[in-house]
Image 1 (cartoon, rainbow, N blue to C red):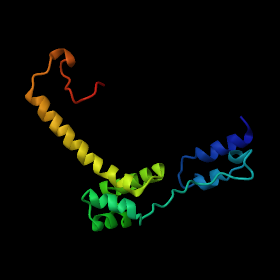
Image 2 (spheres, one colour):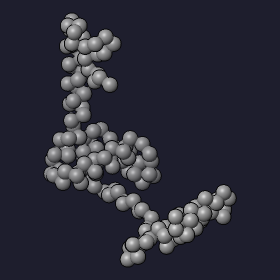
Image 3 (cartoon, one colour):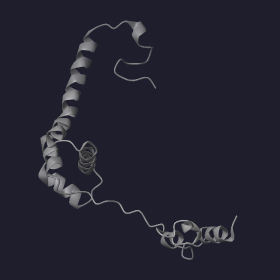
Image 4 (cartoon, helix red, strand yellow):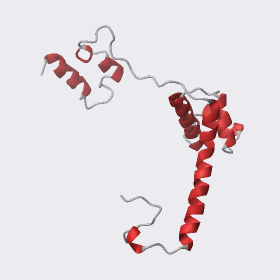
Length: 145
């Protein structure tokens, strides 16, 4: 092990947190940047979400979420289902880079799919299913683990 690496490890493994080197200091260490002198290691900066994406907002409105809920969750950086939905829809929009219509249609799919599952479950419950289709203890709607 090189002396530079040993020095870096000693800086990291100090018991007293007040005397321990910060991550920024460790990232600037010579050993951490060997071979990357042109572009030294830098802290990760998360991209700021687009808080005024009209397409995503419209999709969320079609799901029954109000503008007040969206605005409150995003501006207060709440860790809730509204923020999660907004960020997931933004990610889907970026990944698909399709039309706004496809996102709005996709936003309505969970409700439609849920309705199909419920109606399918009602039909299945009313019939007697052959025992050999599912092992004991498993239901027809749940995947095997």
